[in-house]
Image (cartoon, rainbow, N blue to C red; front, side):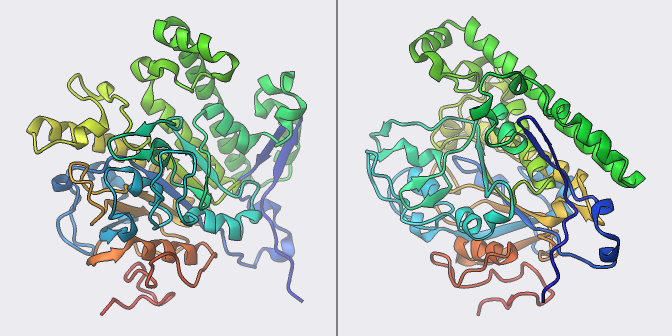
Length: 471
């Protein structure tokens, strides 16, 4: 008979609150102290729209003897935790004009159906949702989908695609894109409040109280059962949760102030009525006055906390919608939208804008890696137990190329990734090989994923998987 699995997790519950806690060694039964239980592996995909400036992306050198490129320099503190993967491509997206076919099929490695209506189809299930269907029942949330911009519902008449394709990378079924949460408060509530809280107390006092206040008695009682190290860990965790709560409160207040003070936004609010919230961005008000970096980092902090507490092991985050006209003027007076800069036509001015916007995205990626590295788990960190993919569906926005995609993978995947290297694969190696390899490491193996040919060679040199280079 198999021994029962031993949990070192605890959950603090209050009226409408449900806080899963990080691993706490004190909670493991004494007879199991000597046992070594495998720690869960997490996986996140961070998607950047509109590609990169190609001449400043690729590192010089290969293997461990590589130097970070100008665009990747913000990752210097995490170089040893990083794999830069060159020459991967998504063959199925090498068709159709524009961006949408690259975005809609990024995690499915399939060719989306061309349509201007509601009959969307990715013609596949995305890699993250394949994983969620297999192991999502092990956590409170099967997966967590986050973003910044609400979906666009119009039609891009230039290429004949609905803009919905540019707003989704996660698909639970070929015709069902998974909605992403763009409001930090709602994302926070998904992780830290019980599912029935809003239904049972839609306007009750519990909805307006800190989740820490709702579980304060249980937290105090638990402290008495923990070792000094675990008490310190619990205090650090609760402080982190409260810090995020306070920042959400401040940013929500800021966004509401923007909506009320901006004439364009105020008219949009009046037109939408109760359907609008502080982050739905009517009239693109927050784009002009809001703090885009803080909004992004709040979402990344929520993802990090969800991983730390094992609330979920699977996450996606979209920095923006493909072909979005969001302005990046907060980076400089002469910097406009990512999409416009991506169509640089080799203009030195636009290329400079393009790189600065790319740098901002890499800075946010570095922020998440630093956060995960700061969260302890066992002898290492949550980052050591994770695989954090950063990528785009096109290489150069000026050419809409699906070849040699900008792909980064950080974290050690629970010891299954040999990081600190630049790997250059054979030209046109399927991106699906990476997905196949990640699913294996997540404990959700598949016989094949889309056009995968097998394990991506060289990710780990210890023989754990079949890692012979392709002939």
